[in-house]
Image (cartoon, rainbow, N blue to C red; front, top):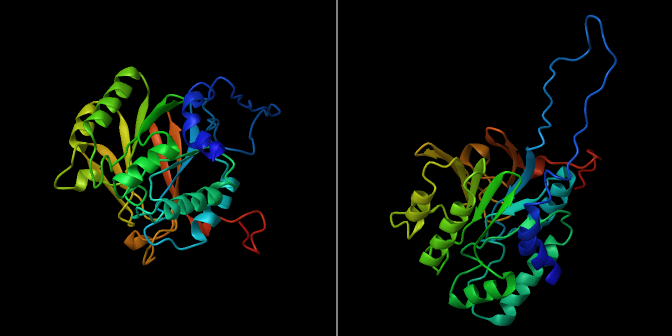
Length: 290
């Protein structure tokens, strides 16, 4: 458990300094051709400031066993630099300590095969009541945080602070300090479980929005189990579907499928690609193993 906690929290302390300094790019070398050459283009997508990561969606809220487990192995095939999540790892909604511990132990066991850092933030199934809120903090160390990777600031919010559906003044102050301390990053990624900008009572989220005014950023949430993209005040906002959570699975046209989001940070901001879990295969395509 200490190992998992290191992945979810301790990496915050070191990731900011380990990206660009140790990364080496491979220069392109080829024989000199006097006329025609068998390729087109000379701009390689290997800017040292670029990096790739994955965001996964809800596992819980009607967990379909096997989907998230399979996804972990498929992410290993993709080899992102790290994985972000937007909450709902367990079914929760309990005050039974032994049941809650068993659910968390089960989740972290599923997570063990992942080969890269995994960043947690809570959903409403992870923090359903004050008892679960304290249990989450005891296990994870904190329920909201930030980190810098490369030239990008990541804000990981808790929309159950306290439950149900709230962002505390302490959390708002924390995020204000994080933004103030990182004024020159090229982009800010905001991750939260509930898409609180859609709520009639935004319960503190409007103050987070105000803090982000004038700063290039992208917002990613989940909770609804149905994919949606909207542009709000000139900013891209995404609501993810599922990575094993309950779904009618009617397909992409309905925003209902198991997926992950592959994100490449570029000099002009993030480029998102949604990958259906069932469309990611290992190197033996025919036997369909992860």
